[in-house]
Image (cartoon, rainbow, N blue to C red):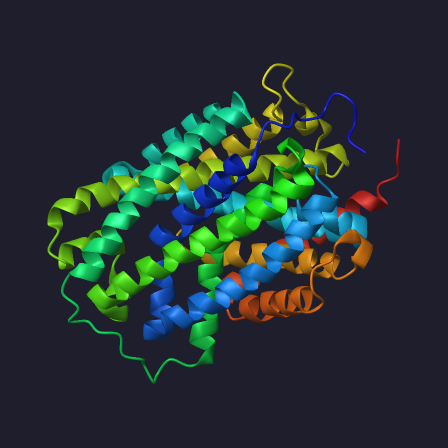
Length: 414
């Protein structure tokens, strides 16, 4: 039950939801995850992409059915609480907020690195302030801004694909015998970072019109669109740079157009990278603030974070708090390694989603029986294939969250 005075308004339609999901996925994946994934999987990158897509599909199916049943802010935090118990919902919400806050800072730093590398941290903080301000004045403003960003980024990526596919293909795709199953699974885990954006749609469930119909359709359309974009870009990059060149490049898509003989496109690609990361940052802050709102409503976070602005109908205290934390991280920390940490935390989040979906009955429109099973196993296998430092950091953060939960339960009321 949502407390009186903290309700959000249902302003988002199908197109808005699809665009928000694409904004979260395209910015993170194409410009941030392809290079590290190529370093792990080599020329088996497309297989890793396929594995990540299968896991993401199962997670999306589970999340969509649950979001239609529980159309309120919070995503898997709510589903875990309702289906598995308060602790599992809390742990999912904790992992999501911490992991995605790190992702927010990483996306802000991506904006800074492409826009003004010598002052990346300053630009990152400015980006966080501006985007938090846009989100503050209403989710419809955020959806409109994201729509413009996504359209621009997709146009840039189309140009990259055309240049890459039409350029010199001397770096033909040759499967590398030295890459084993571990490398492919690790790459799948890194690429999963790119697919996790559809969670933004579920966490915005309380602001969606006709959520039982809109949310499942929007999640699947956004996922299918992102997969098509990733596949085309990955093929163009592998054909042009080869897996080694892709793994070594800090700005791989700019290198693709340069290697393809379209150097004039490189500045355009860099602008596209800034827009993509900004769009991803906008959608990430939306999702994190809504999960923060849901956890504050239940007393797991300070109650003031559940406040909803009387004019703009957004969780303004939660958005400002998230913005401040992200800005501090973006100003002080190098978060390139945060992709692995974020992936592990979010895979834990989706593990709870799949376990929750497995409890649905036929009357509750459950997915096919195999979907949550494959999704849960995929989250575990791919998660523990990530770099050891990411796994250990993720486990430590989840353990810290569990300790906070236990300590709060043991504090006497009053």
